[in-house]
Amino acid sequence: MALEIPKMSYNGVIKEIPLGKEANPVIVGGETSYPFYLFEGEMPHPPKIAMEVYDAPPEEWAQAALEPFADVINDPAAWAQKCVSSYGAEMVALQLASTDPNAQDNSGEHAVEVTKKVAAAIDVPLIVLGSNNLEKDTEVLKMVAEACAEERLILGPVTEGNYKALGAASLAYHHTIAAGTPIDINQAKQLNILLGNLGVPDERIMVDPTVASLGYGLEYCYSVMERDRMAALTQEDERLQFPIVCNLAKEVWKTKEAKLTEQEAPLLGDPLKRGVLLEAMTALLLLLAGGDILIMRHPDAVQLVRGFMDDLMAN
Image (cartoon, rainbow, N blue to C red):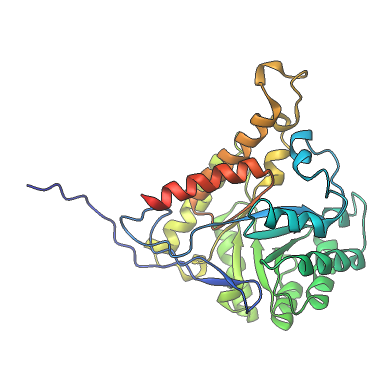
């Protein structure tokens, strides 16, 4: 008598979202089962890896993270090109960190100039992320949305505090929104409802649940993402059936374990391997929780995660 493996039935499906320019879109979403449960459903569009680029030379980065980009760190457009051509990035995430009023406080005009140069340098979808300062992000991302109307960007984080302004900009200039909430499934659903009520079409909404690094609250993030997928797929909650974007690299590489040198912490071993493994393990767990887009930093971590994905998709 053959062993019959029990299978779960899913009634929901994750929405398919086209990203990037109409001539060369990248599709995310479309899952009909839990992540990589290919024996129960389909993942027609495997998760994508975006590599991050900063709008100004980053400060306080670990040396291990700086080395792969040492020749392009002062040129965001060249940096983006290297991520795509040398490291196989399927998207680029431009971090407008220098616009933070608590950092360099660079202007919206600076952000527009950098965004235009990066967009012109690549042919993959471009994610543009603010500095997590509500007032400045609203100002800057509105300017970027208007000035780059032909680029079909992904803008974030769009929060409950600025969704009206940035939702309107998304509608007017045909950009996609990364709806950001602080690790809370109810707030994520509410923001998606608000964006829908504003008129933002479902095919232009993604969820940014806020993530953490391995060892710094990742288990809580995993739980929230897991509940999101359960509600979307088994409870048919239409306001949670959106692809998930995970902005993980900056969370991993700001931890003390990723920054400590071998002299400062000899028992932790090679700092390069340590940082790469921290990023790769964090990314892998977020994939298993339901991440559709991973924003990563180190090429070696990207290679490791891509190998994991290939193995998971093959089984």
